[in-house]
Image (cartoon, rainbow, N blue to C red; front, side):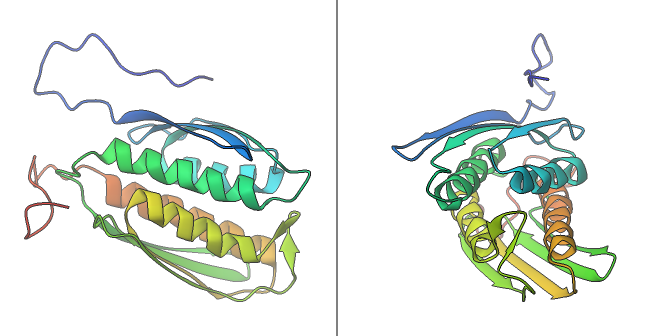
Amino acid sequence: MPLRSISGASDATLPQPRLVTTERKTAETNITVRLNLDGCGKHQIQTGLPFLDHMLTQVAVHGLFDLQVDAQGDLQIDAHHTLEDVALTLGLAFQQALGDRAGIVRMASAEVPMDDSLARVTVDFSGRPYCVFQGNWTLPSVGGIPNTLFVHFFESLAQNARCNLHAIIQYGNDDHHKAEALFKALGRAFCTATRLDPRRGSFIPSSKGVL
């Protein structure tokens, strides 16, 4: 179902919908992302990589983001360009939807188990891109995606979302479970960090006064 912006509000004091569309078009990929930070988990995701679709579904459902991702990439070569550019476009969507980041919680951490596996994601929408990824995989790939690309996904997401992002697979045996716990934790941490804090009002959550 296509995502739609809310219109017709007459009270200027009402919060504006934090809904954006971002695109990235290169010789290698054509990506469109529609993101509503204040959604309910509706999603429509088609990247050509079913396992990536499954992971992004976890972000939407557990982050309560309405998310639509349409991606065409040079999958005849490999998954690298598509996965990287989806992450860059999604990161840019978060960056644009947050605007000046006034009133947001800003920092959050989520720890999620999945059967044998446990993962934690900690985020700070500080305006400074930085990513730390820690985790060991059992096999070279999961769902047809080389496991080395998942760190690249998180790095690219942090780069364009302009956030500190620490993603840690604490332990586990099954790589599918490790990855799914990680992306569920990503959704939960982003959900809390992007939430508007009524006590903060319109103030920037920084002693500097800007992020």
